[in-house]
Image 1: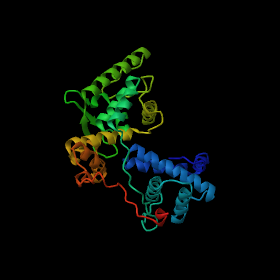
Image 2: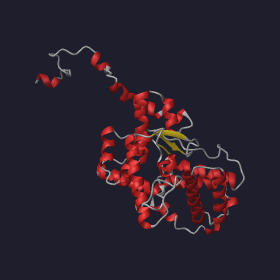
Image 3: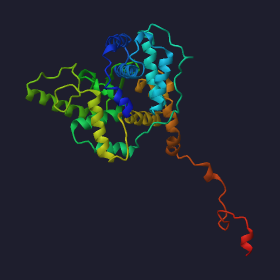
Image 4: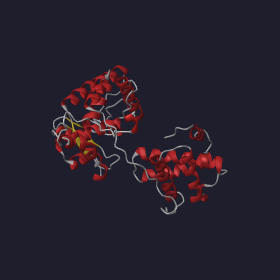
Length: 333
């Protein structure tokens, strides 16, 4: 989230005077049972806001901060070139701060969320998905890519997988409640199962060699490169980035979420069932799933042998010029 030099400099500011507020804020978010990534983002935004307060508001007390201060901070973010969607995350964090710390209601008339264009997501083609698979050089990389492409799971959900979540007999994977606050099952392909078995055998052997406890059914599947310590989402994201870099040499910048879009789009193209896609992705509303209807429109036309209306028109005579040109005075000279 932090990109510019100005905002990076805020991370070095001493905000220790706000530590108790940040701790209370963190506990309130935890009590709300927010997704871990959401709570982490809100806390990060609040720390940047407090660092800004130290520099520009002379360390103003947390309880004394008001809408005028919030608006000035948002203006600072806009001047620094932050995109509207990211600014909305900061606004959401400030809203939670006003609720939980200042014990005040949030007025949407004082500060509104920024509007932004909803662009279609970038989705790998089938050829590009194959390139990602071919670029894998280890069991870890192969399993990660195969899971992302074949299940539509979020990277955080993949990271949270345990041995007991793999339902071999039913050819399903159980996904714990995450961002969508609902659990679900996703398909377990035979190729993915083979990759899982190969990777798990490798990590179990590494644990034995290191004299570490053998993973149990409740142990996380994915590990750091040493095969011992449970992996986190940052590590798996770096692994994916490395695969993407080898596959495309910088020409395409796909993310783990691009694979989620790939899965959802191709499920819809085969089944034409938006409710099925919504359930498999763990969305709570069809509003979040409708994007695949838009993505599939042009692709489904090509798939079903659609003929463009242009080709149904009467073809022009061969002798007629493609472009007519009005005769000018210069032509008479």
